[in-house]
Length: 378
Image 1: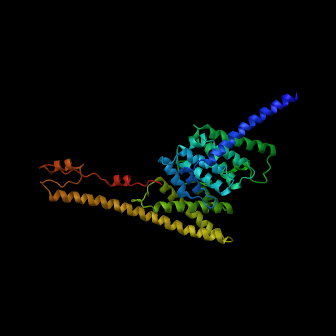
Image 2: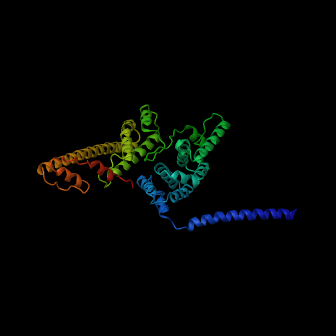
Image 3: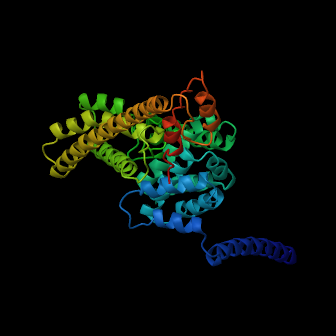
C-alpha cells in the first residue's frame, strides 16, 4: 500500500515537474529572446511614465501593420505581455493600443483570437487586485467585440462575452436585486452603455456618442467623472486633428475619413464644452481646462474651414488656368503644329493641328493629383 502511494506521488511529481519545466522554459525563452522592432515600439507606447495614450504612435503602429512593415502577430504578443503585467498605467495603455489596432487593422482580430489574448483579459478582470479603470476598459472591449456581428466568423469573442455575462447574471440572481456595494463585473456587464466597434480610426473611451452626451448634459445628468472623461476625449480629438493638419502632406488630407470624423467630433464637442464651462463654479482645474479646450476647438475648426476653402480655390484656379492655356494655344497655332504638353496627348494634339481639325479638350488632372497626393497615415 505504501509503495503504491509512493508510486502515485512519484508520478504526480514527475508530471508536475514536466509541466513546470515547460512553463519555466517558455518564460525563460521570452526573457532571453532579443526584442523585436514590434516589441520595442509597443514598449515605447505603453511606458508607465506616460500620463495618457500616445495616439499618434498608436495610429503609426496600425499603419505599419497594414503596410506589412510590422508583423501583426508580434504586436499582439507584445500587447498580451503588457496586459499580463502588473503596471496599472502600462496595462491601460496596452488596452488602448489593442483597441486602436483592432479598429484599424482587419487582420488583428484573428491574431487576438489565435494568441488567446481574451484569456489574459478575463484573468485580469477576475483578479481582485486589478485597477478599477483597467477592469472596466477590458470589459468594455470584450462586450463590444462580443456584440459585433462583424466578428461572427471568430466565435471566441461571442463565447467569451456570453461566459462573462452568464457569470454576472448568476451572481446577480444569488444576491437578489440589491445594488452591489462596489464596482463589480456584473455592474459593468449589465449597466454600461457600450457600442460595438465600427470602422473608425478614433480610439473610443467608452463614453456615449457626442449627441447623447450633449443631451444628458443639458439635463444636468453628467457626473464630475463623466465631464472629466469628456474633456480627455475632446483633448485627444484635438491633438489628433492638429497632428493631421500639421503634416507636410500637400494637399492636406481634409477629405480623408479620419479627418472628417475628427472634425465632426470636434464640432459636436463645442456645445458640450461650453456647457461644462457655464456649469463649473467650484472646480478651477476643470474650468480652466474646459476654457482652454473651447478656444482650441474654435481655432482648429476655423483652420479646417480655411484650409478647405483654400483647396477649393486652388482647384478652381488650376482648372481656369488650364482652360486659358488651351485657348491661347489654339489661338497662336491655328494651322501649325501644337506644342507638346505631354507624351500622352502628343498624338491627339497633332491630329487637331491639321486643317479642319478640332483641338481636343485636355483632361482635368486636378482630381488625379489630389488622389496621388492623398494622405497616407503613418
